[in-house]
Length: 162
Image 1 (cartoon, helix red, strand yellow):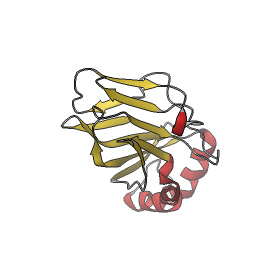
Image 2: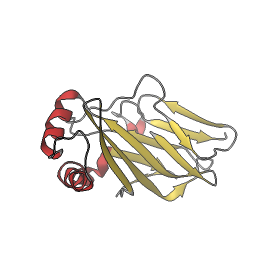
Image 3: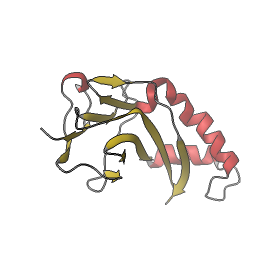
Image 4: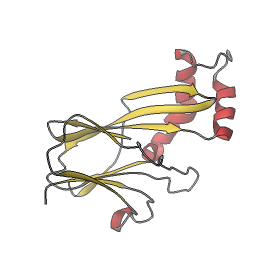
């Protein structure tokens, strides 16, 4: 996951989802129609329409809290899909509108499926990035969800200042 920063505010979030062998093999078999190990633009559009766009009903499992409240109704502004080492990889970006200033309060992001159909986990290292420049004194924390995030296994909190 990467926080996209502009003028010290979070303006977007980029996610890279790497799927397990089972889901990957079924999905690749269904959407890589020419069996060349890569998605053509038409195959990628079909994959997005068939597997990803329906997740919009659940905000793509992306949960964001900023400015003291929850942000809902996420849009997707970038989407790509690829096959890496036989596994499906989807990368997408969600704009944070309006951009959130982590100096005015924490920005909390979580990937969570309330129905427990999809299980999200982070790599042991290198799973968090920043594109842009954060103010000095900004810190990330990854921990168990509390309060409104209760039940979320690993929300990421960005806090700047006090």
